[in-house]
Length: 500
Ligand SMILES: [Zn+2]
Image 1 (tube, helix red, strand yellow):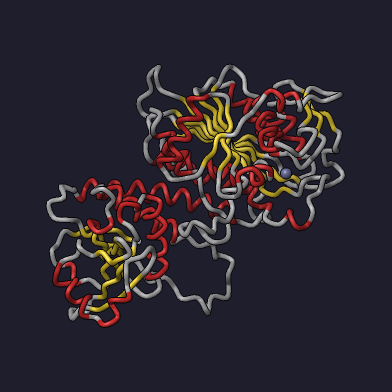
Image 2 (cartoon, helix red, strand yellow):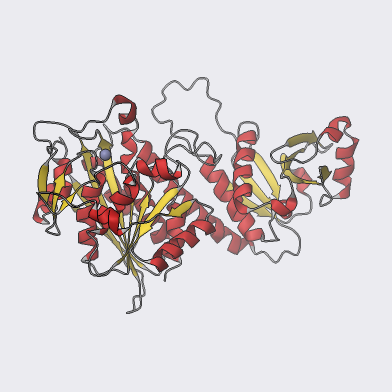
């Protein structure tokens, strides 16, 4: 997809022009249109049926051969960025098979005359919506290929907008969305292809393109040397070695005030539940259990391209959780990297075991913040539904900053509690900790309470439980209706780039 700009008065030489319409007191409002075009529209007999309600479209042709598509945005006062993002996704789907180019009159879609943010939002929406995962479909005979390639933004005259600035805005948006789409690809990949060894290879190869980044891939032996026994207990039955990918980005200018953020991602390439085997109905889609790692890598990658002023480290723990004679037994007691002993009562509560050793390792770097991201619990879906990301942590400022970033990006996040009672519910009869609470109640919070145990050196920590939001988001037209959503990456990028 190519984006271009024109402030040429003659937009009626284009193939397709996109105009907006609003609905004011139940009536059509197109008062912002050029009067000659409005005249043509009103001359059309069926035009009286159209009233500019949300998502309502109307097409008509001009004598120049140009098609005008009118897109209804409802009440003008109620239009917000997320609505614009969603409605533009629908627009893209409506024209992608029938048109090769479209000219969008930006002034007609701008919210409060914020032309640059409007361009960015449309660009983001189109690129997110254009994503497809169809590399394994060999029979594509019935599929009509996307034709839409050129998006022309028509800038309002005397807007003061400089195409050079807008181009860099678009480049940044393309960088962010391509990282999101890369993470969607990783998550959607089949688990027989994307096992831990391959996952690490793909990330290490991709990270070679990043500047100012050091790449370290810890092998099974090196993970053993690090005494990450909880992580290794999850890997015990695997035919593949565990991998810990460590990427560190250092900005060009580092002072004693430069912040350091460590991102930690859960990369369970497949989760059978281990010996506490999942039933067939819930084992399906367990390839997505590595989405925390894909999310963190995407955020890291975009931040490197955006040259953020923060030092960022990315730690990705990769393994599957399978079954063999060497699988970790329920009731096993394992000594973590930190030294805490953990009684593994349920082998399906494995993500927290991988994260525990990684968080301990992360805190040793004495960073300002550690943020982990994981498809950690089914309980977060019970609590918040699949639309909202659960946010936990030990630091109010960090929680409030991440919440603000989510708001900036129109992504849903909700602060969840970790109370003392949840921590004491994790006491084991025969070890220091059990790997899950004594009942299912409060499961997402108790998983977070388990993680908090491994935070040391007074590091400010936040945990994102994306078990809900990582998957299909049918309410968001800019996410694929089935498969990885790529949500929370924009939020993380906003947070990191705001913390110089
Ligand atoms: Zn599990």
